[in-house]
Length: 361
Image (cartoon, rainbow, N blue to C red; front, side, top):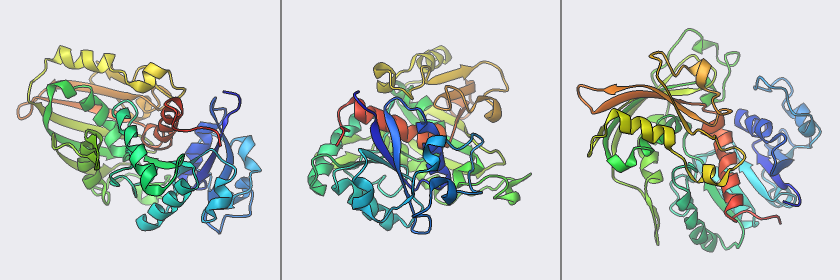
């Protein structure tokens, strides 16, 4: 690559936007050259705009401190100086849809961390190791939007990435019924303990909209590309409960699953340990070398110990055993703001670049 692709972060002052900026520091393919946010932040340096609101434990990268924040609503101005955009804005769903389509119509690829377009039939919602073939639907989307180079691709909900990879690795055995309870970190709400003192020493058994997403989005990811866009799968039947727990980062899932063709324990472990997807085949910069790591210890994975496995891009699993009501039960874990949010979107962008969907302007 003669030069790095110029990346813009739309919604760069929020927690996920900050995570994008941290992950893209020294990235071999992408360089942050533009940051956009609300009109209130526009006109300030990035350092000034997040003064007192930097939420990550790692320091703000020096290279972005002096970047002047632009008004995200001035689409043409922001898009003029970037080759792609990562979007993580906090707006109403219809407003996000319109904003992302406006950026795409400028000929700019948009990799979205938002939920607004997850059910738009011609917008791929991708976990790169699981459904890279869904990128084919971009051709349909470009026709609809009237652009040759722009498009929108979205990252799925953070909660499903704690358990969907482990189920996907067993897809040949046809999972039929799945029960999941997720134990989700406060950063999933864009919060730290300083922001949310009510979460200290507390568990809240409700996260608005999360259970619906956790039950339905896997079916779209397991769906098929057709002339009508992506048609969701009908199997497996998934039911979930999503619970907020007092940890900073990391979503854990307790999973119960039955299969049409019940695998042996040895078959499950072999599939988990050997599972690779397109990112591993291509050697993408953010791809974990070992996508799923299984722990034999009875008390693993643990959120604090294991959420950062493979730089936060790996999935860890443990406690696999047969169940009295379902075929098997197990626990799995992912880092919600890395694999589940910004890191997952960066990996999608890497896949899109490697497959020729993103080019320098």
